Image 1 (spheres, protein in one colour):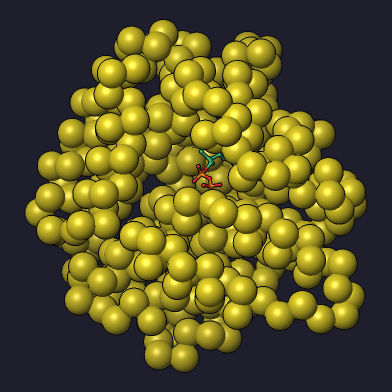
Image 2 (cartoon, helix red, strand yellow; image 1 turned 90 degrees about the vertical axis):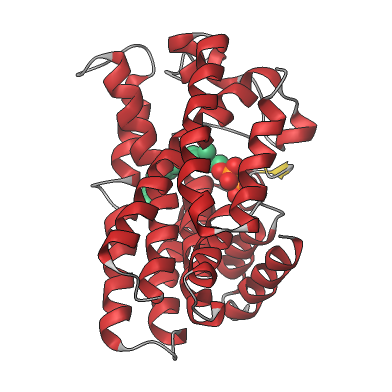
Length: 289
Ligand code: GRG
């Protein structure tokens, strides 16, 4: 896992040279190069590896997905959204570069990412590249990631069109699971996976996305700034709809445990040390809470 993280870090740095006007590239690279967990690129690469593909082929897409994720973090932290002063243990992008540059840095990451897939995926044919860019725009756009964020914002203060349970599922399937689905589906597409394998791994990614969000909600309640690198207890204070606020801590935990077991049941068939390590880390942190 550590080696994969270093490899991704190295590639992210290499793919984005800082040129004139430096301010925008510095702002883009600031959040991008802070120590994130790199879960999405790692899951993309590991999916490719376990399906018998050279991970080099998936590297531009894996890095592009991390850029999209970073864009969403930069914009999420803005005063007009979640208004958070810290991210990945450091001041948020807009705190360092100002709001205008943070908005632009997010926009620039979002547009640079598909450019990277197209320009750097030299080992892939154009049909595969087209599929990857299609997946990228689909999961990153208004039918997934942005939809999740919009409903998340709307739901603050109890404004629901659907029931709270349905609203919560919608938010997390779109705001969180969408990028895990993008990562794993992309790894499978690069590997020319059979349709049934793609479907099974996509199902794993959806479940993982929910598990991860329940984990995130629980951590917001029980963890510290030092561990998370961002402000804790914000969800509660802003009246956000979360697994913990809707179901309570114990019920959120029991949902977490049953869903993570379903994740193990699927991924165990693929014999992946990396996926097992990721699941173990989440499970062990919540155990005993
Ligand atoms: C795509 C134009 C466009 C806009 C994006 C702002 C926004 C719309 C969406 C916000 C999505 C968001 C912040 C979801 C939270 C998901 C989540 C649990 C993030 C934390 O992920 P980690 O823990 O973070 O993997 P690190 O820092 O480790 O990478």
